[in-house]
Image (cartoon, rainbow, N blue to C red; front, side):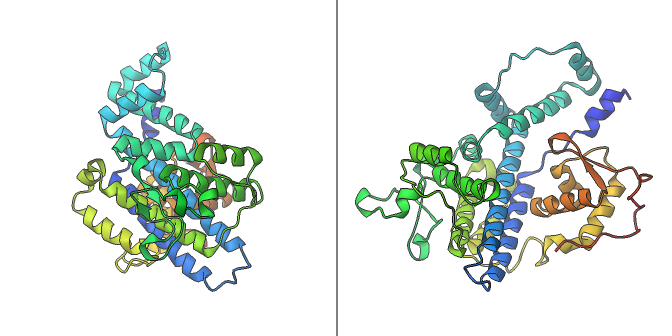
Length: 366
């Protein structure tokens, strides 16, 4: 086998199914609620735990959007064609080396690999809200007709969806700082995450200007405060979002009988209840099958030439959040090496600091 062919095939990362992507995110939401209930016992003035959990669930949702976009685009030729017609330049010239690669691996295999690269690069340039909009428009959700409750009791609580905007005469203070439109609401959540992660809990001036201009807001304070009620609103929003996805034939047709199960689970999560019959049989996914030790052994046994987060999940059965923690820990322990563009490789067994499988197990992640 030609060297470049071997490399191409080894980096052919399988596209995950819609069912796998949804199950993964539902599990992440379930774990978030379990953590939230622990944080309820921490004094409200200690805001750091709330900030960490808020950023964690926002990151999980962003990963979910990316994964679902990859799956839907790469498993449907018509949708992939439509995506390229709107988002990329199809007149790119192919060099001789690429032609040789096509001859070795076949046109379909080459197109799949090329598509993955182009989509990854395109999504990395888009804002979170733009990716959310791309997903919803791709699967046919009329997101411009969906609004979000910003306050109120019961089913009118922050994060639940509604069909009509709030009349001007009934808009309150929250409407000045948060958009009730689906895309705007998602946009502001991610910008809060950015403020916490990158700017010491403050919006950048240019961010405030953009949010006010694009969503018709009047944000004046740059400080971002995350309370326990904020996290509950986020959880309701993300579960409401997933329930909308289940209404789409693009989603429901491929998960079929699982649709009713997911709907029941999401409605429980929407009420900030942990799943009584979880996807993982009530076991925290971080500790299934021997915890990180067991997943490390599976990875070493599979011995992929290189892999990314999605392929690690395929090999080990970990959720996206668990995979993120695992990979960070495995890099710290010098079991694996992080390369460019989210690609990892197993460190050579004869290199210092790495032992053969079954020796010196890693400590399970907290």
